[in-house]
Length: 321
Image 1 (tube, rainbow, N blue to C red):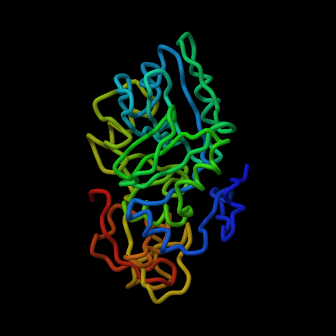
Image 2 (image 1 turned 135 degrees about the horizontal axis):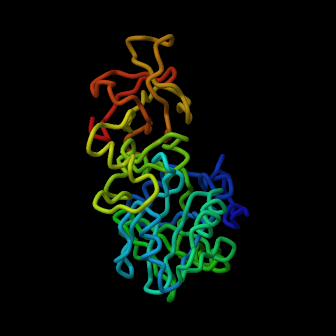
């Protein structure tokens, strides 16, 4: 379902899982600066929208998710994970409850599997799960935005801005009234700057929450009763994760950014050195220049000079060593 905003003049389609929205609208850095200044909006209408209703919804979700949500207050935003039995990350949910409905948005291409899992876990609980992606579109307003929110629209507000669960039929009119539009590349550059992991980018089939710094923001350590809890508790109490997320400043003289999966090695070892990790997301930032997130082995020294493919990289720790 390609966004109608992708057909506006100047829109250039994104790639990969974001291909249904615009990468940019002709000026990447202008769009980033607008978001940083609290103006404009980002079309995230390709993300999946799943709602949960019913009297038992919060108590039921509390049993399934890594976050403490049984007493989630109306309007309070949070995020949570669904883990495998071995503690590996399967889903990332971004939630808000409005008093009668829990609204969540999830990564493109993951909603069907999430809905199937939730449906399989309903048992005797008074809950209803609905895939609302066809009729609800997600729009992001940056922190500081004074854009009007239509009455009755569910809003998830965090330090990074507001996510609006907007009726899809209103998307074009709302964007026209509250632009300028910023593409997903501008949004992603700010996400990388803020060290915020993203499912499918910073994760692979064996990622655990500790590796990405998702403890606290998406995982509550004082609750139990969720699948994968044993792994979380074991790593928290007895050891450290095998890998850690890092923020990289990349050499700005290179024309091309190292893409997702680009091997990370010690600069001293050269191109034939042992791979220590990989690039997860890279971006061009309007102030910082080329930057990236990467997942590397925990024991790599924090002051080590790295190479991302052929690009020199200096690291900043995101997750405690």
